[in-house]
Image (cartoon, rainbow, N blue to C red; front, top):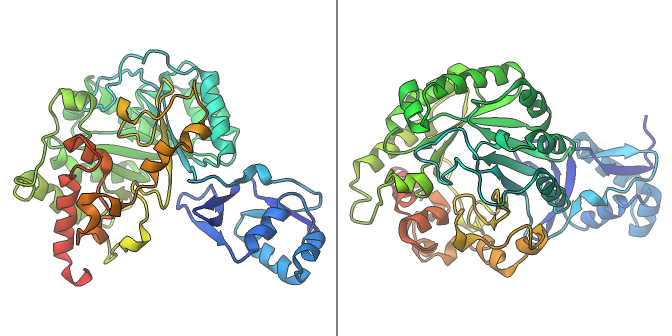
Length: 449
Protein backbone atom coordinates (compact mmCIF):
# COMPACT_ATOMS: atom_id res chain seq x y z
CA UNK A 1 0.00 0.00 0.00
CA UNK A 2 1.22 3.48 -0.88
CA UNK A 3 2.75 5.31 2.08
CA UNK A 4 0.44 8.05 3.36
CA UNK A 5 3.10 10.74 3.55
CA UNK A 6 2.14 13.24 0.85
CA UNK A 7 -0.74 13.96 -1.52
CA UNK A 8 -1.02 15.71 -4.85
CA UNK A 9 -3.79 16.60 -7.24
CA UNK A 10 -4.74 13.74 -9.56
CA UNK A 11 -3.67 14.00 -13.17
CA UNK A 12 -7.00 15.38 -14.40
CA UNK A 13 -8.00 17.31 -11.28
CA UNK A 14 -7.74 21.00 -10.39
CA UNK A 15 -8.42 22.98 -7.21
CA UNK A 16 -10.30 26.15 -7.96
CA UNK A 17 -11.82 29.13 -6.18
CA UNK A 18 -15.22 30.19 -7.48
CA UNK A 19 -16.92 33.20 -5.92
CA UNK A 20 -15.28 32.72 -2.55
CA UNK A 21 -15.61 28.93 -2.33
CA UNK A 22 -12.99 26.31 -3.20
CA UNK A 23 -13.82 23.26 -5.29
CA UNK A 24 -11.99 20.12 -6.32
CA UNK A 25 -12.88 19.41 -9.94
CA UNK A 26 -12.31 16.20 -11.85
CA UNK A 27 -12.06 17.70 -15.35
CA UNK A 28 -12.68 14.31 -16.96
CA UNK A 29 -16.27 14.41 -15.74
CA UNK A 30 -18.59 16.02 -18.25
CA UNK A 31 -21.27 16.55 -15.60
CA UNK A 32 -19.20 19.40 -14.07
CA UNK A 33 -19.43 17.73 -10.67
CA UNK A 34 -17.47 19.69 -8.08
CA UNK A 35 -16.53 18.83 -4.54
CA UNK A 36 -16.98 21.81 -2.25
CA UNK A 37 -14.13 22.23 0.20
CA UNK A 38 -14.85 24.68 3.01
CA UNK A 39 -14.72 25.15 6.77
CA UNK A 40 -10.98 25.72 6.69
CA UNK A 41 -10.28 22.47 4.83
CA UNK A 42 -9.34 24.50 1.75
CA UNK A 43 -6.34 25.96 3.61
CA UNK A 44 -5.27 22.47 4.68
CA UNK A 45 -5.37 21.27 1.07
CA UNK A 46 -3.56 24.34 -0.24
CA UNK A 47 -0.79 23.58 2.25
CA UNK A 48 -0.65 19.91 1.27
CA UNK A 49 -0.53 20.82 -2.42
CA UNK A 50 2.67 22.81 -1.84
CA UNK A 51 4.34 19.49 -1.01
CA UNK A 52 3.99 19.75 2.77
CA UNK A 53 3.81 16.32 4.41
CA UNK A 54 0.79 14.92 6.24
CA UNK A 55 2.63 15.02 9.58
CA UNK A 56 3.76 18.63 9.24
CA UNK A 57 0.27 19.67 8.11
CA UNK A 58 -1.27 17.98 11.14
CA UNK A 59 1.07 19.93 13.43
CA UNK A 60 0.49 23.23 11.63
CA UNK A 61 -3.30 22.94 11.78
CA UNK A 62 -3.61 20.96 15.06
CA UNK A 63 -5.26 18.00 13.32
CA UNK A 64 -5.49 14.32 14.20
CA UNK A 65 -3.56 12.31 11.62
CA UNK A 66 -6.18 9.56 11.40
CA UNK A 67 -9.00 12.03 10.76
CA UNK A 68 -7.02 13.89 8.12
CA UNK A 69 -6.06 10.66 6.36
CA UNK A 70 -9.69 9.49 6.36
CA UNK A 71 -10.73 12.82 4.81
CA UNK A 72 -8.02 12.57 2.17
CA UNK A 73 -8.86 8.95 1.39
CA UNK A 74 -12.42 10.05 0.62
CA UNK A 75 -11.03 12.53 -1.91
CA UNK A 76 -8.74 9.86 -3.34
CA UNK A 77 -11.79 7.62 -3.80
CA UNK A 78 -13.30 10.47 -5.88
CA UNK A 79 -10.17 10.45 -8.07
CA UNK A 80 -9.29 14.08 -7.36
CA UNK A 81 -6.13 13.47 -5.30
CA UNK A 82 -3.54 10.70 -5.12
CA UNK A 83 -1.19 9.55 -2.37
CA UNK A 84 2.54 9.83 -3.07
CA UNK A 85 5.77 8.97 -1.29
CA UNK A 86 7.72 12.09 -2.28
CA UNK A 87 6.92 15.76 -1.87
CA UNK A 88 5.18 17.05 -5.01
CA UNK A 89 4.00 20.60 -5.68
CA UNK A 90 0.52 20.80 -7.23
CA UNK A 91 0.01 24.54 -6.87
CA UNK A 92 0.21 25.07 -10.65
CA UNK A 93 -3.24 23.47 -10.73
CA UNK A 94 -4.65 25.63 -7.91
CA UNK A 95 -6.48 28.66 -9.30
CA UNK A 96 -7.82 31.76 -7.60
CA UNK A 97 -8.91 34.56 -9.92
CA UNK A 98 -12.08 36.67 -9.81
CA UNK A 99 -14.27 35.98 -11.66
CA UNK A 100 -13.27 32.37 -12.30
CA UNK A 101 -12.46 31.50 -15.91
CA UNK A 102 -13.66 28.00 -16.71
CA UNK A 103 -14.11 27.65 -20.45
CA UNK A 104 -12.51 28.99 -23.63
CA UNK A 105 -14.21 29.10 -27.01
CA UNK A 106 -11.52 29.30 -29.69
CA UNK A 107 -12.41 30.16 -33.29
CA UNK A 108 -9.16 28.91 -34.83
CA UNK A 109 -9.82 30.21 -38.33
CA UNK A 110 -12.63 31.80 -40.29
CA UNK A 111 -11.65 29.71 -43.31
CA UNK A 112 -14.38 27.26 -44.28
CA UNK A 113 -15.09 24.86 -47.13
CA UNK A 114 -18.82 25.60 -46.94
CA UNK A 115 -20.97 28.72 -47.26
CA UNK A 116 -23.81 28.07 -44.84
CA UNK A 117 -26.67 30.50 -45.36
CA UNK A 118 -27.15 30.93 -41.59
CA UNK A 119 -23.50 31.25 -40.48
CA UNK A 120 -23.38 33.97 -37.84
CA UNK A 121 -19.66 34.68 -38.40
CA UNK A 122 -19.91 34.59 -42.23
CA UNK A 123 -17.19 31.96 -42.46
CA UNK A 124 -15.49 31.30 -45.78
CA UNK A 125 -12.39 33.40 -46.31
CA UNK A 126 -9.81 33.81 -43.52
CA UNK A 127 -9.92 36.94 -41.40
CA UNK A 128 -7.21 39.52 -41.83
CA UNK A 129 -4.34 38.78 -39.42
CA UNK A 130 -5.42 35.38 -38.17
CA UNK A 131 -3.49 33.91 -35.24
CA UNK A 132 -0.69 31.49 -36.00
CA UNK A 133 -0.40 28.03 -34.53
CA UNK A 134 2.28 29.19 -32.09
CA UNK A 135 0.04 32.05 -30.93
CA UNK A 136 -2.86 29.69 -30.30
CA UNK A 137 -0.60 27.37 -28.30
CA UNK A 138 0.56 30.33 -26.19
CA UNK A 139 -3.09 31.23 -25.57
CA UNK A 140 -3.86 27.68 -24.49
CA UNK A 141 -0.88 27.68 -22.15
CA UNK A 142 -2.08 30.85 -20.44
CA UNK A 143 -5.65 29.54 -20.35
CA UNK A 144 -4.45 26.46 -18.45
CA UNK A 145 -2.56 28.66 -15.97
CA UNK A 146 -5.78 30.65 -15.37
CA UNK A 147 -7.80 27.53 -14.59
CA UNK A 148 -9.54 26.88 -17.90
CA UNK A 149 -10.54 23.24 -18.12
CA UNK A 150 -13.19 23.27 -20.86
CA UNK A 151 -12.31 24.07 -24.47
CA UNK A 152 -14.59 24.48 -27.46
CA UNK A 153 -12.62 24.60 -30.71
CA UNK A 154 -14.44 25.84 -33.80
CA UNK A 155 -14.27 27.95 -36.96
CA UNK A 156 -14.95 28.39 -39.80
CA UNK A 157 -13.76 24.87 -40.20
CA UNK A 158 -11.19 24.44 -37.44
CA UNK A 159 -9.37 21.62 -39.20
CA UNK A 160 -8.47 24.02 -42.03
CA UNK A 161 -6.11 25.99 -39.78
CA UNK A 162 -2.64 25.28 -41.19
CA UNK A 163 -1.38 24.22 -37.77
CA UNK A 164 -4.48 22.34 -36.61
CA UNK A 165 -2.53 19.13 -35.96
CA UNK A 166 0.05 20.96 -33.83
CA UNK A 167 -2.67 22.79 -31.89
CA UNK A 168 -4.54 19.53 -31.31
CA UNK A 169 -1.33 17.83 -30.18
CA UNK A 170 -0.86 20.56 -27.58
CA UNK A 171 -4.43 20.12 -26.34
CA UNK A 172 -3.77 16.37 -26.04
CA UNK A 173 -0.70 17.11 -23.90
CA UNK A 174 -2.73 18.92 -21.20
CA UNK A 175 -4.55 16.34 -19.04
CA UNK A 176 -6.90 18.90 -17.48
CA UNK A 177 -8.35 20.08 -20.82
CA UNK A 178 -11.80 18.69 -21.54
CA UNK A 179 -12.08 19.70 -25.20
CA UNK A 180 -14.81 19.62 -27.83
CA UNK A 181 -14.27 20.07 -31.56
CA UNK A 182 -16.95 21.63 -33.77
CA UNK A 183 -16.67 20.57 -37.40
CA UNK A 184 -18.76 19.97 -40.49
CA UNK A 185 -16.89 16.67 -40.78
CA UNK A 186 -16.49 16.82 -44.53
CA UNK A 187 -12.72 17.16 -44.75
CA UNK A 188 -11.61 14.99 -41.85
CA UNK A 189 -8.72 12.73 -42.84
CA UNK A 190 -7.29 9.69 -41.00
CA UNK A 191 -4.43 11.82 -39.61
CA UNK A 192 -7.03 14.23 -38.20
CA UNK A 193 -9.03 11.45 -36.60
CA UNK A 194 -5.98 9.94 -34.92
CA UNK A 195 -5.07 13.16 -33.12
CA UNK A 196 -8.72 14.06 -32.53
CA UNK A 197 -9.16 10.81 -30.63
CA UNK A 198 -6.36 11.86 -28.26
CA UNK A 199 -7.04 15.59 -28.01
CA UNK A 200 -10.81 15.90 -27.84
CA UNK A 201 -13.29 14.43 -25.42
CA UNK A 202 -16.04 14.94 -27.99
CA UNK A 203 -16.70 16.05 -31.56
CA UNK A 204 -19.82 17.92 -32.64
CA UNK A 205 -20.83 17.66 -36.30
CA UNK A 206 -23.37 20.11 -37.71
CA UNK A 207 -26.53 18.72 -39.32
CA UNK A 208 -29.28 21.15 -40.34
CA UNK A 209 -31.98 18.90 -41.73
CA UNK A 210 -32.84 15.22 -41.87
CA UNK A 211 -33.34 15.45 -45.64
CA UNK A 212 -30.04 15.47 -47.52
CA UNK A 213 -31.07 17.95 -50.22
CA UNK A 214 -32.37 20.44 -47.67
CA UNK A 215 -29.25 20.15 -45.53
CA UNK A 216 -27.08 20.62 -48.61
CA UNK A 217 -29.05 23.72 -49.52
CA UNK A 218 -28.37 25.16 -46.05
CA UNK A 219 -24.70 24.33 -46.37
CA UNK A 220 -24.22 25.51 -49.93
CA UNK A 221 -22.63 22.28 -51.12
CA UNK A 222 -24.15 19.22 -52.71
CA UNK A 223 -23.26 15.96 -51.01
CA UNK A 224 -22.33 17.56 -47.68
CA UNK A 225 -25.07 15.68 -45.77
CA UNK A 226 -23.86 12.24 -46.88
CA UNK A 227 -20.22 13.06 -46.11
CA UNK A 228 -21.04 14.49 -42.67
CA UNK A 229 -23.17 11.47 -41.75
CA UNK A 230 -20.43 9.08 -42.88
CA UNK A 231 -17.93 10.98 -40.75
CA UNK A 232 -20.22 10.71 -37.72
CA UNK A 233 -20.43 6.94 -38.17
CA UNK A 234 -16.67 6.65 -38.66
CA UNK A 235 -15.87 8.70 -35.55
CA UNK A 236 -18.26 6.60 -33.45
CA UNK A 237 -16.63 3.43 -34.76
CA UNK A 238 -13.28 4.80 -33.54
CA UNK A 239 -14.76 5.21 -30.07
CA UNK A 240 -14.89 9.03 -30.20
CA UNK A 241 -17.88 10.60 -28.46
CA UNK A 242 -19.73 12.23 -31.34
CA UNK A 243 -22.62 14.67 -31.14
CA UNK A 244 -24.86 16.52 -33.57
CA UNK A 245 -25.34 20.28 -33.59
CA UNK A 246 -28.66 21.47 -35.04
CA UNK A 247 -29.44 25.14 -35.66
CA UNK A 248 -33.17 25.70 -35.23
CA UNK A 249 -34.82 28.19 -37.59
CA UNK A 250 -38.17 28.86 -39.21
CA UNK A 251 -37.07 26.94 -42.30
CA UNK A 252 -36.10 23.67 -40.59
CA UNK A 253 -37.98 23.39 -37.29
CA UNK A 254 -40.41 20.91 -38.85
CA UNK A 255 -37.49 18.49 -39.19
CA UNK A 256 -36.70 18.50 -35.48
CA UNK A 257 -38.38 15.18 -34.68
CA UNK A 258 -36.64 13.53 -37.62
CA UNK A 259 -33.29 14.97 -36.51
CA UNK A 260 -33.76 13.32 -33.11
CA UNK A 261 -34.58 10.04 -34.84
CA UNK A 262 -31.48 10.41 -37.04
CA UNK A 263 -29.32 11.09 -34.00
CA UNK A 264 -30.69 7.98 -32.29
CA UNK A 265 -30.13 5.81 -35.35
CA UNK A 266 -26.53 6.99 -35.75
CA UNK A 267 -25.77 6.34 -32.08
CA UNK A 268 -24.54 9.83 -31.19
CA UNK A 269 -24.28 10.80 -27.55
CA UNK A 270 -25.93 14.20 -27.64
CA UNK A 271 -28.09 16.44 -29.83
CA UNK A 272 -27.31 20.10 -29.20
CA UNK A 273 -30.15 22.29 -30.47
CA UNK A 274 -29.18 25.93 -30.94
CA UNK A 275 -31.26 28.89 -32.05
CA UNK A 276 -30.31 30.72 -35.23
CA UNK A 277 -28.50 34.00 -34.50
CA UNK A 278 -29.42 37.19 -36.34
CA UNK A 279 -25.83 37.93 -37.33
CA UNK A 280 -23.55 37.34 -40.31
CA UNK A 281 -25.11 35.59 -43.29
CA UNK A 282 -28.27 34.78 -41.34
CA UNK A 283 -28.88 38.52 -41.07
CA UNK A 284 -27.79 39.19 -44.66
CA UNK A 285 -30.20 36.51 -45.90
CA UNK A 286 -33.04 37.78 -43.65
CA UNK A 287 -33.46 34.35 -42.07
CA UNK A 288 -34.49 35.71 -38.66
CA UNK A 289 -37.82 37.42 -38.35
CA UNK A 290 -37.84 39.96 -35.54
CA UNK A 291 -40.40 39.21 -32.86
CA UNK A 292 -42.04 41.99 -30.89
CA UNK A 293 -44.60 42.17 -28.08
CA UNK A 294 -47.45 42.51 -30.57
CA UNK A 295 -46.62 39.29 -32.42
CA UNK A 296 -44.81 37.14 -29.84
CA UNK A 297 -47.84 35.39 -28.39
CA UNK A 298 -49.70 34.99 -31.66
CA UNK A 299 -46.82 33.90 -33.89
CA UNK A 300 -47.61 30.36 -35.10
CA UNK A 301 -43.88 29.63 -35.30
CA UNK A 302 -43.47 30.36 -31.60
CA UNK A 303 -46.37 28.08 -30.72
CA UNK A 304 -45.03 25.31 -32.96
CA UNK A 305 -41.53 25.58 -31.47
CA UNK A 306 -42.97 25.53 -27.96
CA UNK A 307 -44.99 22.39 -28.66
CA UNK A 308 -41.95 20.62 -30.13
CA UNK A 309 -39.70 21.62 -27.23
CA UNK A 310 -42.31 20.54 -24.70
CA UNK A 311 -42.49 17.17 -26.42
CA UNK A 312 -38.71 16.82 -26.51
CA UNK A 313 -38.36 17.85 -22.85
CA UNK A 314 -40.21 14.68 -21.84
CA UNK A 315 -39.05 12.39 -24.64
CA UNK A 316 -37.25 9.23 -23.63
CA UNK A 317 -34.26 8.88 -25.87
CA UNK A 318 -30.89 7.17 -26.06
CA UNK A 319 -29.56 10.61 -27.01
CA UNK A 320 -29.13 13.45 -24.54
CA UNK A 321 -31.09 16.39 -25.95
CA UNK A 322 -29.93 19.93 -25.14
CA UNK A 323 -32.68 22.48 -25.80
CA UNK A 324 -32.02 26.09 -26.90
CA UNK A 325 -34.02 27.45 -23.97
CA UNK A 326 -33.88 26.74 -20.28
CA UNK A 327 -37.08 24.83 -19.60
CA UNK A 328 -38.28 22.79 -16.62
CA UNK A 329 -38.07 19.05 -16.99
CA UNK A 330 -39.57 16.30 -14.87
CA UNK A 331 -41.23 18.87 -12.62
CA UNK A 332 -38.01 20.81 -11.95
CA UNK A 333 -38.29 24.56 -11.49
CA UNK A 334 -35.39 26.96 -11.23
CA UNK A 335 -34.84 28.97 -8.10
CA UNK A 336 -33.92 32.51 -9.24
CA UNK A 337 -32.11 33.09 -5.94
CA UNK A 338 -29.61 30.43 -7.00
CA UNK A 339 -28.89 32.10 -10.36
CA UNK A 340 -26.61 35.03 -9.65
CA UNK A 341 -25.20 35.69 -13.11
CA UNK A 342 -26.33 35.78 -16.73
CA UNK A 343 -25.02 33.36 -19.38
CA UNK A 344 -24.92 30.43 -16.94
CA UNK A 345 -22.04 32.18 -15.17
CA UNK A 346 -22.91 30.43 -11.90
CA UNK A 347 -21.83 27.14 -13.46
CA UNK A 348 -19.34 28.07 -16.16
CA UNK A 349 -17.69 31.36 -17.06
CA UNK A 350 -16.72 31.44 -20.74
CA UNK A 351 -14.38 33.55 -22.84
CA UNK A 352 -14.44 33.73 -26.64
CA UNK A 353 -11.42 34.41 -28.88
CA UNK A 354 -11.82 35.04 -32.58
CA UNK A 355 -9.37 33.99 -35.27
CA UNK A 356 -7.76 37.46 -35.35
CA UNK A 357 -7.22 37.53 -31.58
CA UNK A 358 -10.18 39.69 -30.59
CA UNK A 359 -11.55 38.69 -27.19
CA UNK A 360 -15.30 38.69 -26.51
CA UNK A 361 -17.43 37.74 -23.51
CA UNK A 362 -19.84 35.67 -25.63
CA UNK A 363 -19.54 33.66 -28.84
CA UNK A 364 -22.95 34.92 -29.97
CA UNK A 365 -21.70 38.51 -29.84
CA UNK A 366 -18.69 38.31 -32.21
CA UNK A 367 -18.99 41.97 -33.15
CA UNK A 368 -16.88 45.06 -32.55
CA UNK A 369 -18.87 46.61 -29.65
CA UNK A 370 -18.06 43.52 -27.58
CA UNK A 371 -14.39 43.22 -28.48
CA UNK A 372 -12.85 43.93 -25.08
CA UNK A 373 -9.24 43.52 -26.21
CA UNK A 374 -6.90 41.65 -28.53
CA UNK A 375 -4.52 38.92 -27.44
CA UNK A 376 -1.68 40.58 -29.34
CA UNK A 377 -2.02 43.73 -27.23
CA UNK A 378 -2.99 42.26 -23.83
CA UNK A 379 -2.83 38.97 -21.97
CA UNK A 380 -5.86 36.78 -21.30
CA UNK A 381 -5.59 37.67 -17.63
CA UNK A 382 -5.58 41.41 -18.34
CA UNK A 383 -8.66 41.26 -20.56
CA UNK A 384 -10.52 38.76 -18.37
CA UNK A 385 -10.04 40.82 -15.19
CA UNK A 386 -10.76 44.16 -16.88
CA UNK A 387 -13.66 46.16 -15.48
CA UNK A 388 -15.43 46.04 -18.83
CA UNK A 389 -15.36 42.23 -18.87
CA UNK A 390 -16.41 41.99 -15.23
CA UNK A 391 -19.35 44.32 -15.82
CA UNK A 392 -20.62 41.91 -18.47
CA UNK A 393 -19.77 38.61 -16.83
CA UNK A 394 -21.02 39.48 -13.34
CA UNK A 395 -24.30 40.98 -14.53
CA UNK A 396 -27.28 39.39 -12.81
CA UNK A 397 -30.74 38.74 -14.30
CA UNK A 398 -32.08 41.15 -11.69
CA UNK A 399 -30.11 43.98 -13.32
CA UNK A 400 -32.01 43.55 -16.59
CA UNK A 401 -35.16 45.73 -16.61
CA UNK A 402 -37.07 43.11 -18.61
CA UNK A 403 -36.25 40.35 -16.10
CA UNK A 404 -36.19 42.21 -12.79
CA UNK A 405 -39.83 41.77 -11.79
CA UNK A 406 -40.83 39.04 -14.23
CA UNK A 407 -42.87 36.27 -12.57
CA UNK A 408 -41.47 33.76 -15.07
CA UNK A 409 -37.84 34.29 -14.08
CA UNK A 410 -37.75 31.06 -12.11
CA UNK A 411 -38.62 29.13 -15.28
CA UNK A 412 -36.15 30.65 -17.74
CA UNK A 413 -33.44 31.93 -15.39
CA UNK A 414 -33.17 35.19 -17.32
CA UNK A 415 -33.14 36.22 -20.95
CA UNK A 416 -30.21 35.62 -23.31
CA UNK A 417 -28.52 39.01 -23.62
CA UNK A 418 -27.01 38.06 -26.99
CA UNK A 419 -30.43 37.40 -28.49
CA UNK A 420 -31.66 40.55 -26.79
CA UNK A 421 -28.93 42.58 -28.48
CA UNK A 422 -29.67 40.99 -31.85
CA UNK A 423 -33.37 41.74 -31.41
CA UNK A 424 -33.18 45.33 -30.20
CA UNK A 425 -29.64 46.65 -30.31
CA UNK A 426 -28.86 46.61 -26.58
CA UNK A 427 -28.37 44.07 -23.81
CA UNK A 428 -31.48 45.47 -22.13
CA UNK A 429 -33.67 44.85 -25.17
CA UNK A 430 -36.43 42.27 -24.75
CA UNK A 431 -35.63 38.73 -25.90
CA UNK A 432 -39.16 37.90 -26.91
CA UNK A 433 -38.30 34.47 -28.24
CA UNK A 434 -37.12 32.97 -24.96
CA UNK A 435 -39.56 35.11 -22.96
CA UNK A 436 -42.57 33.65 -24.75
CA UNK A 437 -41.26 30.10 -24.41
CA UNK A 438 -40.68 30.62 -20.68
CA UNK A 439 -44.15 32.09 -20.22
CA UNK A 440 -45.78 29.19 -22.00
CA UNK A 441 -43.95 26.64 -19.84
CA UNK A 442 -44.81 28.63 -16.73
CA UNK A 443 -48.48 28.80 -17.61
CA UNK A 444 -48.56 25.05 -18.25
CA UNK A 445 -47.27 24.36 -14.72
CA UNK A 446 -49.16 26.83 -12.48
CA UNK A 447 -48.80 24.64 -9.41
CA UNK A 448 -45.04 25.02 -9.57
CA UNK A 449 -44.99 28.84 -9.60
